[in-house]
Length: 289
Image (tube, rainbow, N blue to C red):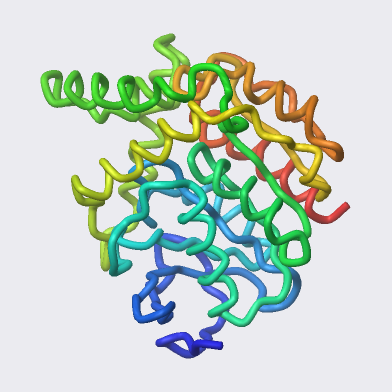
């Protein structure tokens, strides 16, 4: 087992102040942040496409950390983590498992958002003893309808964002309604709350690798979800443009032990950020049931 580069620290009151630490995983340093109680089954956060540590909504992380030990980390080659970014979901899942074991955990819960939800499904299937419960948000199964269009949508939104000087997450994560725009701007303001020791942005080669992995996931043959026996909570907005919301309903139908959070109204891919209070309540109830 590898030893974390930094020793354990007392519980941090807020994600915006959580120290960034690192652990060595097969010669590469994985950056991570941890907060919440030091006992109990840890909740590992698996981020979306192009996401780094600073892309987690602090309201979600802080809310979960009131009662759970929460750990967010950068995938290999992303943000503060060294190495080369894998171009398959399966390789990302193997990295995540190695990271978890490097921290010395024998059992964890997973919260996977979007691409992180793809990774969480692979881990749950391949490492059934490691994973106790799974939360899947804004995500879908391999071969799910529309998932292979994510790269094209992302590129178009990025170009549009550059022309209009708006963060592409506004159009990718939130609806175009007045309520959706308000929620999107509020979310972006929350992401700015951390002002010191911010994470590095993802590099273009890493984005390309992740886009390739997502496209491949979307074009795979439909996966057999019956092998995922862990209890699963499934959540999303009702109007997800990136991973169409029907994929959420499909997961809830096909996973043997699933619980569906009613789709968030007037919300898209970032539904758990738009409805952060409601999501945290549902997630904690599920994890503690």
